[in-house]
Amino acid sequence: MQFVRNYQKIFLMKQFFFLLCLAAIMFSCTRNPLKVNVSDVSADVKIRHLDADLMKLKQDQLASEIPVLKHSYGEFFDIFTYRMISIGGTEQEEFAELLYSFISDSLNRELVQNVAANIDTIKLRKELVQAFKYYKHYFPVKDIPTIYTCISGFNQSVVTAENLIGISLDKYLGYDSRYYKELGLPVYKRRNMHPEKIVTDMMYAWAVTEWPKADNANNLLSQMIHEGKMQYFIDAMLPEMPDSLKIGFTKNQLDYCNKNEAAMWTFLAEHKLLYSTDRMSVKRFIDDGPYTSAFTDQSPARTGAWLGWQVVRSYMKQNKDVKLADLMNNPDFQSILNQSGYQP
Picture (tube, one colour):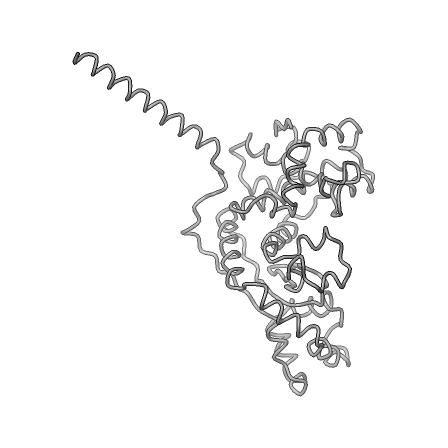
């Protein structure tokens, strides 16, 4: 009887050990390798609010305050006035008048209030600090850009230059914002004009600035994989974020891509589009829009970017020794595909 009990005990211990090993294997297979511990990483994120500083100005202060603002905000002040609100530079005689016209405009003042009501800047700061902690983890010698917020009268969403990112917060007031409807913006654009897209748009813009498209990215495949690299960068900077937010697809659009991945890839291969250098063919699968015209109206636009993302994910999964910096600096799109083992 004692022998039977001992045998049962040994059997149960072996069974428990087997299940423990199985659970460990399953966990290692499903664990996201990009969810690294960055709690000890320091990320000094500086955020400057040009929108707030501009709205404090009085007309009789402009002559003395414009040089102060220009000095304080440096290059971004010129980017804002030249590129974002198109009033030119301080050397123009009418500059002060044009700037005051912008800041005293009732709509722009209303926009500042709407931004304050709709965008949680404390939450935004926390998200940016976390994203740049991952950035410093992967790229410890790179500098963190200074972040500048503004309103631009619904002009550019994100601008970048050396060591800076500018963000127009009036472009993220929410899908149902009456301003966007009055402007006649299409649904596919409004769908991503909400606060949750701010950080992804900023990190994407920074990736494109740090790793611009290579000169040899002249066919569809190379542009797909370039976009895939940018999306994988966002994977690494925002590992907790759902894919739908990272790429700006609805749940149904993402489901469409997952269900039709093989069919979409086969279509590109069979129609010899992967190596096409025809600009319109490339734009059809890379640029934003209501949907991809080569597929159904249930598809999202940018299906080529999504497929490139899956190729890059497969490449990084197959080549565990490749670091994120290696990927971002690798201009050989064909070798990335060849070594990806990608089989949709």
